[in-house]
Length: 306
Image 1 (cartoon, rainbow, N blue to C red):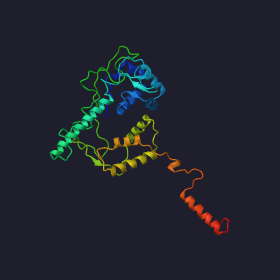
Image 2 (tube, one colour):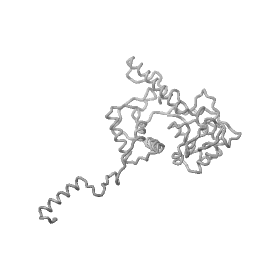
Image 3 (cartoon, helix red, strand yellow):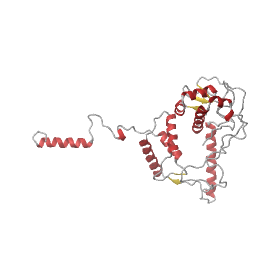
Image 4 (tube, one colour):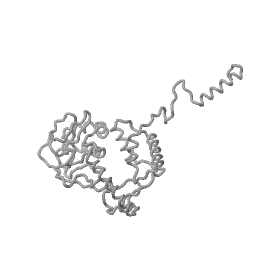
């Protein structure tokens, strides 16, 4: 999980005031999307239009919180988005980590956990507990919204200089939101001690509403069609069956299901309710059998239909 940095005095920043509350709701949602999907500050046009309106997008552009293709912002880290997409002004360091930084932290954390588990196994510890029960449960190496060693003077979207900037409040906060807990029932930490236990997937496991929404947004970002309720049910059955057949164990299943659903390419239903509609001239097996019986009766009746 990655965090979106928002300073504690963003409420009084001139850009925020100029944008207005409605547009700031769009700014916040799309900023969280960029952090979750590691887009390095790029907001796909499809996501912006899904979450907000054209007037809200226009206000973010006018306030300098967003940039569109061809912008003239002098900030060196404000890249040019593709036509139709947008860039969150001043998104990257020292405010938000880049995709490369997050992936490096995840790799380091995974290697650290691998070594810890190997050492525990060597000592005969099969309980799966760390020496420090409060250390890094999400797979990050001391991950936080902003690195305290950085001298931040703002947060994503309103630091630095851009057209329309003037004198006013500069953000100087390093927000430190609480660490998230593991999802779901199976694998939940017990009493705040130890790591989440790994277990097989329940036969009746279902994705949460947040899982479905995240998968649908990822599909929209990739230009894929949205899954119907029936397709989501089919994807879930296939997912549970595969996890069961492969004897996979995990502390939580939402993230794995999201990746599965994001990449799923379901066969389109050819008729209402998923019923296959046969082309004209084509006959089902049952229709072929009935036609054969009709021809047999015709021959038995001397060439006359019954």
